[in-house]
Length: 208
Image (tube, rainbow, N blue to C red; front, top):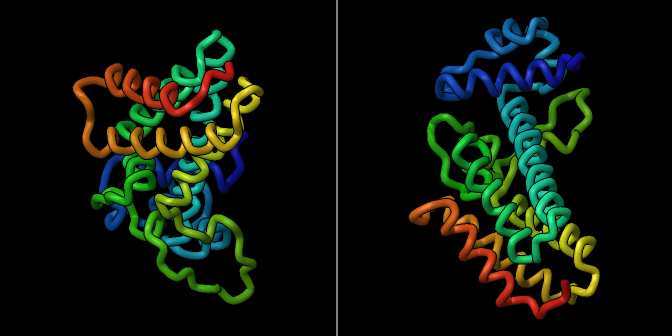
C-alpha cells in the first residue's frame, strides 16, 4: 500500500499531466490522494517543495531505467555500444513521456513544468522542518552527471576489462549526444541509437 507521500506525489504527477503547474491547487492534490491538506503541507512544506520532491522522484525513476536498460542489454550479450544505445532508447522514450524528465535533462521548461523543480533557485528554510534532499531542485548538469556515473558503473560491471578513464569519457560524451537527440530528434529513434552505439565503440578500445 503506498504511503501518504507516494500517494501525494502520484496525485501531483497526474494533475501535472492534465494542466499547467500554475493551475494545480494543493487542496486538489490532497483530495485526489485521499489525505488532508495539512498532511500535504506537513510532508512538503510548500507547493514548490512538492514540485521538487516530484522532480526528484521522476529523476530517480529515470536513472533506474537507465541502469535497467544497460543491464538488460548486457545480459543479452550486447557490446558496450549497444548497451549504451539501449540507455539512449530509454532516455528518448522517457523524455517524450514526461515533460519533467525532458526539462531536467535539457533545462527547457514549458508551463507544465514547475520552475522550482528544475531551476537552481534558493530553497527557503521553514521553521521546525528539517531540510531533506528533496528540497534541492534538479539542475540538468546534476542529472547528466548521474546518468554518466551510472552508465560507467554498469558497463564496468559488465565489461571489467574496460579502461575506467576511457569508459568515463565515452559515457560522458554519449550522454550529451543522447540529450542532443532529445532537443533535436534524429530521423528515428533507431537511427539515434545506432549513432550513439558507433560513437561509444569508437571512443572505447575493445575490452568486452
